[in-house]
Length: 160
Image (cartoon, rainbow, N blue to C red; front, side):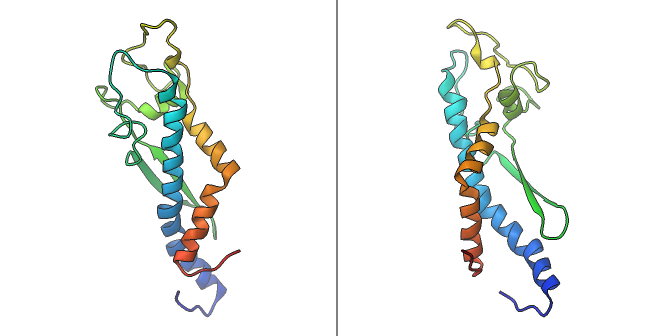
């Protein structure tokens, strides 16, 4: 860790270098893994498709590599990281699959290619709130906070 003569220089270094590095590694990995688990639980476990084969963690909605992160700076010491699942529909160009699944069929984010079910009522058309539950579970478990502390330790910054 470099030495600083002014507290403002330390804060500037943390905001521009340390915090984005930690959030882009340790915190990002925890958020994405939690979301992938929730895709399995709240999306894939709901039903088994008859008309197509799921991609799962292989280029599908549960694939951790289908995420982007963007940093937003809003004042001194305030860095937000926006994480977005960027999975697209397999055969539907431009379809934002994550939003379609999260908010449901015909709710402003597109429609399913196969909006029917051979097993009765097509419940998959309803919202399956995997993002909502990811946020809720992270708030309850504080796994992202623990990840941030691990990142601080990696930068030789000790916290309680």
